[in-house]
Each structure stands twice: as structure tokens, then as C-alpha cells.
Image 1 (tube, rainbow over the protein chains, first blue to last red):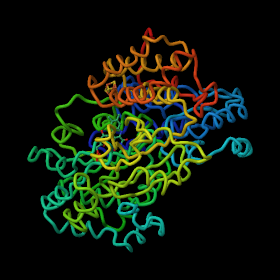
Image 2 (cartoon, rainbow over the protein chains, first blue to last red):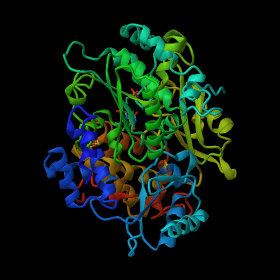
Image 3 (cartoon, rainbow over the protein chains, first blue to last red):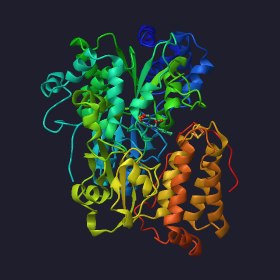
Length: 154
Length: 438
Ligand SMILES: Cc1cc2nc3c(=O)[nH]c(=O)nc-3n(C[C@H](O)[C@H](O)[C@H](O)COP(=O)(O)O)c2cc1C
Ligand code: SF4
Ligand code: FES
């Protein structure tokens, strides 16, 4: 765990507790995309806070994961603007191609599929986010190509 | 209808994310001008401009700046609300991607006006592309010596709609769960770390440079008097050419949807319009001649909100739409107060029953009664954001709701464009609550 990096982040803020979110983000990156208990403890130690305090914060935010996730995260926006132009069909195409239901991780641990709320790309719906990168717009027929690309890259 | 680009001026032709390009169109001149003025004189210009906040509530920015407590011995903070997450909105993202220096210049001018040395930009956690663009732009501005004695910290959120609410944003920035604070005290008196704090939306701050450059009086004269200036309208849904359009306030809803947006695709009929993001109440095609400014939309019974116009065609079942929208508010509820936490959940359960054709007549009344118990009874506006629209979906589309009861199921028979919509309900951990009997 990169204690120096966390210490450097903390200096940007008047109070070190403000560094919890950036520190958790860093910890999550270093722990394979999720926050195991030791990651929470490390952040708490680095910022001199109680682990319970750090966990309380971590459990509030959707982008922080307290359970393991797949190597790739595929997220489909299903809020109104995307739903009106076919988000359901895109999500379904990913379910079929990846063989997992939304909210689940494939057995080989390679893919987590999630439905997400409005991603801020409604003008280019349907928005799909793959490993934090936006793909917009995505049609159901684009899905096999995206999955193929991810599998090839591994 | 005039496209009038102030915030996005030249962003179509040039790569304004490059400092030199931004300077080539006169960028950072307003900053130089402002720094030669007394801080109070800059606030005077903001007051004269009558610039109203672009984050949803439309509060005059100059007035908010003038409320800031003085002589407290504490630092004054500026927080930019870049948490954009209201369903239907995507303007701040585009402003920051295409014109990051406009926001930075706005931050520096505003910081000068309120005598602040510390600016925090609370950036929506999902906006990785924006983060990269803004980080580079900030670095360039720093190297060019534009920052003076001001530091701007780009703080990334981590996925929570409620952190766009200003007091929740402050809590989150302090490293806590993003739950709203009771007010008073207001942030202008006791905000970030208990210090006087000004919080404004990205677009509000990005509009400040042009006001300083051309003068508050000039700005006050463009567009309708009670809400002058331009707004970036986010157009989405069932429309031929969705996207962001920067227009004078007071532009016509019909022109936006039909002239700029190209109308409804596939020969379908317009059924409903949500004018300001999903927290604003639905409008119907007979209201197409409404002008898009704060007061006119309010007179039409809705809200301009964040100017995110969602177009809905006749394939959509309005019960499904109300359900999907309410599911969002249910799991973005932070859980702090009971009417919102339990009320949104109850609303979802009743709407689901209606959609499934399992609801009894009395449950439609119950739905409205639950909304009534949420409206105006919550700690922050999220409760109203959830309940207000549901009341109007029912009022404007009562027949459609009624048919779900009478026919024991969805009258669209699986053919609605929203059939099978899937909400990410169980992935959120904001508000662990027990089942509510519905
Ligand atoms: C639930 C909720 C979410 C909000 N989300 C945002 C947001 O994402 N961006 C924003 O600028 N304002 C948002 N607001 C409004 C802010 O509380 C605040 O009024 C605004 O940032 C003030 O800036 P302005 O005066 O420049 O509009 C939200 C309000 C509520 C109640
Ligand atoms: S209204 Fe909802 S989101 Fe706002 S404080 Fe109460 S529970 Fe939290
Ligand atoms: S509704 Fe999908 S990005 Fe906004």
C-alpha cells in the first residue's frame, strides 16, 4: 500500500479526513478492484483514523466495492434517457454474451456486469461503461464486438 | 431560435482544452481584468448580471456570494459542484471536456471576488475523462502562472447522487458519508470545515468570466429579464438529434425539440416532456409553446431544474416510467430521514404493483397519499424530487394508471419501450431498511 501517496494526497486538504475518498480509490486499485478488510485498515492507519470510520465511508459509495469484482467491469446505464432508446436490449445482450446476470460476476472472475444509474451521457444513449471508460452510444449489435475485444485483450 | 454560445463559445471549432487556444479566443482576459478590480466590485457585477444558478434551484449567484460571512477569522472556501448526476443531465461534463479553462478562469475570478484562496471542484467520480482533461488544464494554468495565490483541488466523488446536494457535498468533501446537513446554518456562514463557503454549479462558475468581461448590465439584458443569459440544454430521449444546445433562456420548448432536435424519430407521436431532469415534473404536448426560462416553466407548472429536456414518445408506458424514475430516488436516498427513506421505497412498491396489475383501486390513492407525506417533509430536496414527479405522472396520465388496475396488467402488453427496464436496486448500500408493507 502506497503510504507516501496517501500522505501526499492528505496535504492537499485542510483536514486529513478529506483524503479518505482518494485514499480508498487508490487502495481499491492496488487490491484488484475491491476493498478487502486489510485495505480498509491500511487506509485507516495511513490517515490515523479508526477502521470503522473508513468502512462507514466506503460502504456509502457505489464506486467503492466491499466484495470482489471481476477483472473487467461492464456497466450499462438503465436510467430514463437510455431506457427510452433500448438500454434493456443492450443489457440483455451483455447478459447473453457474458453469461451473467446484472450484479453478478462470471465464474472465471473475468467479468462483472452491472446496471447503473444515469452516467451523464444521455445525449449519446445507450451509455455503457467498460472499466471506467465510456462507450457511447452502444446498440445491442455492438455488444458481441465489445465482449470479443475484452476477451482478446486478456 | 438562436443558438447563443457563451459558455461553449468556439468550442466547436477549436480545441479549447489547450491553454494557448483558449487564450487565443481571449481566455483569461476576464481574470486579468477582475484582478485589477476590488473584490466587492466584482461581486457588484455578479449582482447586476442577475445570473441565476444553473445547478437546479436558480438562486441568484451574486446574492449568494454577498451572503458570505465576513471577518470570521476563518478562510472562505469556494466549492464547485461538478457532481452532475441528475438523470437527463450531461451539460457540465461537456463544458468541462470542451472548455476546461473557462471553468478554471471562472473559479479564479470568483475566488478573487469572495477573497478565497482555496477552491475545491467536487467532480463526479465516474467522470474519468473529465478528470483527465481538467487535471491537465489545471497543470497548464499553474505552469503559466495564472493561479496567483489560489489553489484548486480536483476532488473526485465515488458514486452517490446525493453528493450533488450542497450540504451532502460538503460532508463528502470532509471525508464522511454524503448525508445532507440540517440548515441553518447555511454554507455561507458555516460550510466546509465550519467556514464560510460558496457553492455553485459548474455552468454558473463558467459563466462568470463573460460577465466580468462584458459587464453585469450587459449580461442582464440578454434573454428574459427575470432569468437572463444562456443555458446549455441537454436534450435526450426519443428525439432525432439529442445533445447539448446552448441557447438563450426563454427559447421555445417546441423549437428545441423540433427545429434543433429534429423532432420525434420513426414517425412516432410526442407523449410527454420532462423539462429539467427526472426530478422535475412532467409536461404534456399541449405545453410545447412554453418558453424555457425559470419563470415560464414554473408558470406552466413544472421546473426548469438543470435544463435537461427528456423527450418521451407514445411507446412509453408512464407507469413504467414513473417506476423506473422512482427506483432511482429510492436507492439514492441517503437514508437520513424517514419520509424519504421509507416513502420512496413504499412508492416503488406501489408503482410496481400497479405495473404488474396487482394493485387495487385504493392503492392508487395510497400512492398519492404517500407522496403527500413526503412532499415538503424532508431534510433535503431529494424527497420532493421523488414525490413531486409521481404526483404529476398520475395527474397527467390518470387514465393510463387506471387501465393498469382495470385491465389487471400493463395495457401496453409488453410492447412499451420501457418494458423490462432494470434498476440497479440491490447494489446500493446507502439506506439499509426493512421491507415496508405495501
Ligand atoms: C438531491 C440533490 C442533488 C443535486 N445535485 C446537483 C448536482 O449534481 N449539481 C449541481 O450543480 N447541483 C445539484 N443540486 C443543487 C445543489 O444543492 C445546489 O443548489 C447547487 O449546486 C447550487 O449551485 P448554483 O446556485 O450555481 O445552481 C442538487 C440538489 C439536490 C437536492
Ligand atoms: S430527503 Fe432523502 S436524501 Fe435528503 S436527507 Fe432525507 S433521506 Fe437523505
Ligand atoms: S440516462 Fe443513461 S446516461 Fe443518462
